[in-house]
Length: 200
Image (cartoon, rainbow, N blue to C red):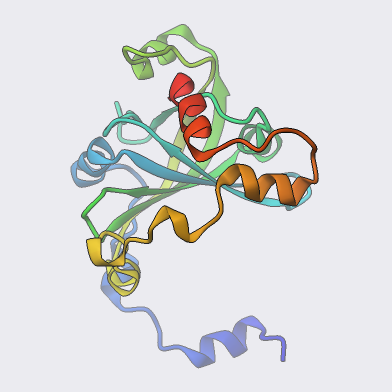
């Protein structure tokens, strides 16, 4: 059975006042502190055709800068050059962010418009000792709110007892080789990590 909006709302109680009022239209001091401590953010975007993408980005804590209440800056770091997120931003100018802090079960959600910039002033703001990015993602905040801890508590994501040994999966080289059918020597996990170190 396909649910319509009225059907869906009938299955759940109305959101409480706190859940509605916590949504901000700016980054208050708590949001900016959260971003300053976060080494990891997921960027959610959509293309003009509606195709969706969620891309992880990481760096030293605070690699995403929030110099103002409305405009966080995200440096683009070297990746696989597919440019899925960047192309989506060019196409639709929309972006959703989910910030995480290791050991903290709450997350920060930020939604808004976004654009790409090569402005040297903005690039300098997000540059670090290792690199100056080619592009900066500049977000204009429309919604920002702290998300409760339930999902992380259920998953026990930060619990040492919940950690999975890397050996539970084949190497990345093996999985991609089998998925793509591309010929060539299979990259070991050690070789992959050494290659990644060059661009971290």
